[in-house]
Length: 241
Image (cartoon, rainbow, N blue to C red; front, side, top):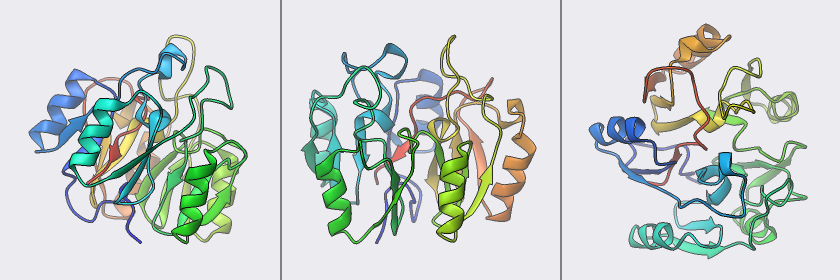
């Protein structure tokens, strides 16, 4: 079954934080950029992160945090049926209801804390639920293909290896989020075509940048830098069509 985060052709639209340089680069590729509004219940540094506020379970159904009315209208105009979760919370684990990574056959997340309606929908779709301890599962996972991923999280790495995937484990701490916290590589990336990985920043600023480039080359995927400077967690670049 198709998964929006694994596009079969060039993306028509993505959901991501409103970042002017990245917006301009994506629009130059002919990609529409939809922005979630900041959720006042989330911490400021993640309040407008797409991977906290939205999850496209398939090409027809999206789950959204409350208050995302403009995003809901945009998605519905593109053929999605949208379902709303319970309000998110400022602290973990109430902030990770939607932080689930959905592939063609798997869903990776901490299903103790994921929205139960999302979980049930994924089961109905026939997805294998891969439970991990990391609640910020989508933040932590960069999609390369349906069979290949990049993560800093050892638990996700082990779970995906056991599921028969090829996974590159990189060092944590190289991705910026705020002045206080480091971010996740998955939150800085997103496939915008089967052979193009958008990256919010320059891969060469990462301690494992060269390893990432070689891993991408192995699968015929080229990085597209959306802006200069350090790789920064912008809450994911979520392809929706």
